[in-house]
Amino acid sequence: MISESPYSLHAIGNIRPLRDAFSSFFFVSIGMLLDLDLLMKNTAYIIALSICVILIKTIACGLATSLIGLPTRLVVLVSLALSQVGEFSFILSKVGLDAGLLSHEVYQLFLDVTVLTMAATTFMIAISHRVAAGISQLSRYDALERIGKQHALKDHLIIVGFGVNGRNVAMAARAKGIPYVVVDLNPDIVKREGGNGEPIYYGDATQEQVLRHLGITDARVLVIAISDPVATRQIVELARRLNEDIYIIARTRYIQEVETLHMLGADEAVPEEYETSIKIFAKVLERYQLSRDTIERFVEDVRAGDYSLFRSLSEEAYCDANLKLMGKVIFTIRVPEGSKAAGRNLDELGIENVLAINRGDETLRSTGGLRLQEGDVLILIDTPEKMGEIERMLMN
Image (tube, rainbow, N blue to C red; front, side, top):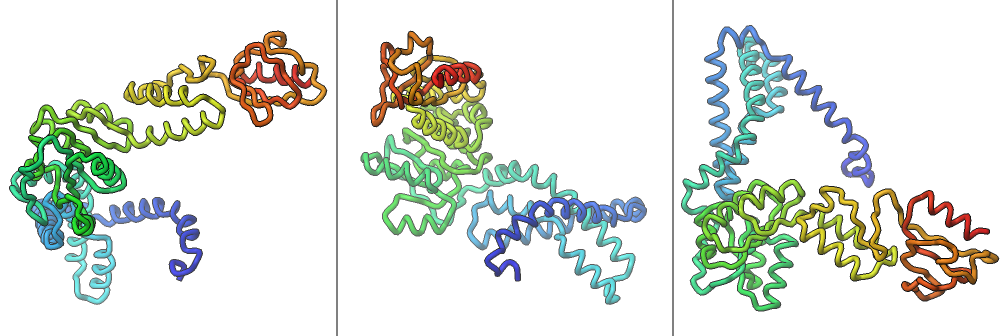
């Protein structure tokens, strides 16, 4: 009833913090159900049953996902992640025990097998990407639709992923007449965009056969615009091995991935979290009346240094006064009516580090010999202590 009410999201937000606590209680209680005596007496038998259950569920899940048309890599990942006996089985087994359908011995045996399969899930998921990569290499073709090799394309652009980033890259390439092809794992996007004339194909770019069909050996640039970090690393490594001269630009969500991607062969690794930070900080600098050249120089220096300015918390400032920002703040002070500072210039007052002065509708950047007027707003950068001194000076 709550989920169908207008307050469902608010209720979920209040309840969500309890979810982890309840999950902990659940798994601890499940572990307490494990009969260690039964396990020790029938170790080989219970382990064999657990392995059989994992194999049967893996095959069943794999068959179901393959019928949907997912590529081999995703089939393997889904199958291994769902290979354990589910939590709902505890409810069914208890009902079966109460109804007399299961004996107490069989019920305990079932609990031991279930607990072991659930415990094994962590390890199954940990190795799933390696297993998926190995099986994918054995699969020669892996796509809903066979990708015909682009014989007519040379020095073209390959775009992996057709989300917001991939779509924008394709739009720019199309506007400039750059030949390109797109590969994506979402069948709905491939069908829709393909119908609109987009050169897009369904396939898993982590596989060598798919990249070869896209003309990786003749391509000039590869843009990886997907959010899967494991797949991104695999594509970078594979593409560099297939074409030593291709220019690889990879999108990543975190700055920690940048160095790894460079080591694997990426020429450019663009971390989303710092691109967002750069954009926000550039907007902040705009509001503090810094010049466009200064802001652009800041952005260029951060990007040119592989974002090391942010990672090392560099103290170098990017402001018109060419000062250091550590321990300093940007602030504004208005010259009040009747201030003794009115009519005097900044040098006489001993006020330094003035970025600009707002006077009415004007912003005055050359403040050398400028005489202050009542109502002027000074934009300065200095320590909080100095700010207090300047404020007291202008108030007198």
